[in-house]
Image: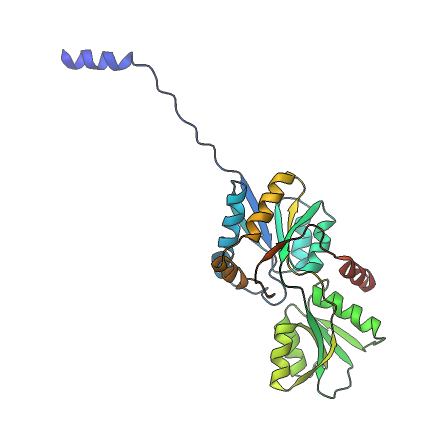
Length: 265
């Protein structure tokens, strides 16, 4: 009797409202690590890039989702869909992203530097460059043209390691490399500096203009305030030097645009 009364009482209790927890929106971030890190293992990429991504996501109260690009061609293909909110890419790729309704938010503090190296005392017949439309490719072509040099052959390879190997095996007598790798080869005594490449802005974080100006500002402040440990972790995913970020919405890409145009891309 008491049990039936208790159950009957439960039936007339007011229903408690269910609290809905809306899922956070996604912040889709694409990273092309450049020709020096294009072969990074996926597990390493996610582990090292995630602290950077989490800071960006927290800035706009969103869940970060990472996409790794291994080639410039794959970056270009992704631009057609407009799916990604952010791109963190080398400067020549940033130029292409700019043309698809994205804006620069921050760039790495250090400038992009590189050199054309050649085998010591060699007559240059063939030049090894990285992937077409990469920074090292377009800036090297620009430099060769400005110095009125027309090699018999120009080869394009996926990575800087491939370029270095081509020079070491004399498949090419010269090639373009970022300064760090070039210095390593010079120290080995095999090559010498031939021509320096023009200095330009380097890796840049680009945000879609679909995001509000306020959110783009928040992302810039968050990246500029990235912790030393997060910067150290991010450095393991890209080939350029990263000592921090600076807010630079007016990064000067005119030199790169000119070089891309001269290359006929």
